[in-house]
Image: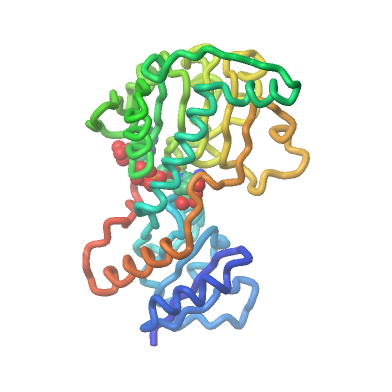
Length: 311
Ligand code: NDP
Ligand code: OXD
């Protein structure tokens, strides 16, 4: 019987193993143990992973396919010795629903300046703010893939003036779409910026001082892509200078965000613990099993990543 190895460094690892075993009884599912030199390797054909240690995947000589437990694959592609086998990511309606909720929540939080109202309430102050209505607020979404396009549509449905940016041109109802070199046009006048890009060499530290300078004065930044999209010190400088009015950050260079990190101390940065769209193991497990079955049967798998474009 072929084996599937699971690598997920969290308290639910045992649960993942049992769940995948129930869903895929035709495979022997076991937890990976990169520390164990005696780990059984030669029957492993499939690996289901979140942040596998670099160099570990290449130790399985019969590996046929890798599955990322999540939509992003940067945590797998970061391995310099990654075996050249197909890489499947995990997306789906459930992940999209959760991301839509997070993005709507944070955009509306800044749009209606809820942070200021909550802070005033702490002082027992009756702070009545008049905001522009959504059609007069421009929201920009960077990355118009499975998650970004869906969030852009949801923001347009609320009534926001929505612009979007992707690598290749796109058409999305209710969204003015820009592509590639038109980044500056996309940024000009944007008041709330949402980053839903994948992390690749082209997008690393894209949220930097030069980009913030193009936004409207007093803009807000929401980063729900990856921590390395953001230049942390340039964000702080833009906030201190008043160019930006606030940020919501869900992803960080180092996760969990270390104790003592300056972001914890700032009222103008809303820190959330990578919960933008945390994969639900029930729904995610079912998707992973369905994708693997299709792969094993030699059928097309929608969620295959393109190693050349890096996402
Ligand atoms: P997709 O691969 O479906 O879409 C990526 C989008 O980014 C595409 O529109 C693509 O353009 C665009 N893009 C990629 N590179 C560039 C570039 N250099 N310039 C301009 N646009 C670019 O990804 P998803 O929507 O599924 O996910 C996006 C990211 O969200 C993930 O990679 C992950 O990092 C993050 N994520 C975060 C979660 C959280 O909980 N915080 C949960 C899930 C995902 P094109 O359409 O032209 O290819
Ligand atoms: C993902 C994530 O990539 O959780 O799915 O960040």
